[in-house]
Image (cartoon, rainbow, N blue to C red; front, side, top):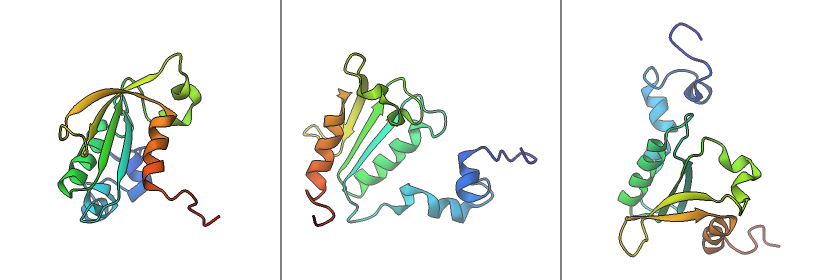
Length: 137
């Protein structure tokens, strides 16, 4: 810690300081401020117990994408922290991860519904939006 600046804070690694001290750089680094017309489809996966980057950040990005009329899907995964996809635990069918889904393309608008997070759910998103042979093979 340097004075009141915590160098372990994620913003320090990204910005080199606190967002309050570097507002222009913080705004430029924020995904929320990069959203605009023609934004690509986005799938957001976020643990609702994430202590590194709070789930409110994912909600803000989702709301910005919806406001830009982009296709956006937000899965808030229950009771998991940051980096939950970096373990094999989320693929265990014996103890599935439950999530709340908000989708800009939901027939009911942007209502919420409960889903089970599976590799297949993520694969379907990519199958819909990426070419079958992305490297021309």
